[in-house]
Length: 333
Ligand code: BMA
Image 1 (tube, rainbow, N blue to C red):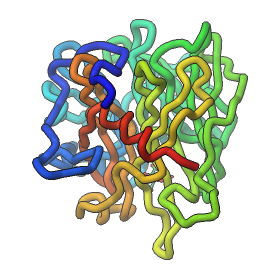
Image 2 (cartoon, rainbow, N blue to C red):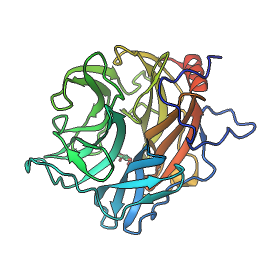
Image 3 (cartoon, protein in one colour):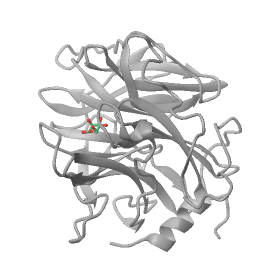
C-alpha cells in the first residue's frame, strides 16, 4: 500500500464523507443519500446534473447545469454548508462580458470550477457558432466575468489544471462534432494568460484495442485533475455504444506531473458504472458523468460529484491511496 499523504493540496476537514460500506470491495462507493441533488431542487429546473462544487468560505459553492422546464441548458449558482444539501438558484448566472460578440451566449452546459491564482475560474461547454469552451471568473460567486472562448468549435469537456504547468496555464479538452459525437480523445493545451491557447498535445484516445470495452467510443476529462506525489489523478468519463445508445461510465488515469499529456497509468476497468435506478433511468439512461472532486490532503479522501442519467446529481467517495493502488494493479492498454 502507498501512504495516504499522496494528495498535494489543502486540507478540507469538512469534506462530505462516508466510510466504505462493510464488505464492499469497489474502489469507489456511492453516498447513501444519493442522489444528493434531486432534479427539482430548484422548482424551475427540469433536471440538475453534470455540475461542479468547490470549497467556499466555511462551506461550498458551485456551478450547476440546470436544464429548465423548456429543456434549455443553463448554468446557475448554488451554495451548501455541508456539500450534501444545496440551495440552487432559480435564475441563470448573468455573465458580465464587455464584448457583445461572445457575451450573452444562448446556452451553456457541463460546467467545471476551480480555484486558481486567488480566483474561481469556470469552464463550460458554450455556444459560439457551435460548441466551444467558455471561460469565466468570479471572486465571490456574485459577479461572474466572461473571458474569451478557449477553443474553436467544436469542443467539449474543457477542464483547467489547478496550477500552472511550468509558467503556463493548462487545460484538458475534447474536440468533437456538431452532434452527440461518436468519437473523442482527450487533449492538453497551454496558455500564458487564459486567453490565447496553444501547444496542443494528445493525452489519450478512446480504448481502441480491438476489444469491446466501456470506453471504446470516446473519453472526456471530468473533475479538475488532482495533484498527487505520483502524478495528476485524472478522473474521466468513457463511453461505449450499445444497441440502446451510449453508456457513460467513470474511469481513472494518472498523468505525469510536469508533462501531463503523458499517461503513466490507465485503469482497464471503469471505477463506477451506471447501476442504480437514478443512474439508469432518466432523461438519458445509463449515464454517470463526473464533473467535480473535493479532496482532503490530510486524509486522502476524495468526494466526486457526478451527473446521473442527465437528471440529478450523485456523490461518490474514494481514497487517494486506494485509487492509485487500483491504478497500478489494473493498468493496461
Ligand atoms: C454528452 C453531454 C453530457 C451528457 C452526455 C450524456 O454529450 O451532452 O452533458 O451527460 O452526453 O447524454
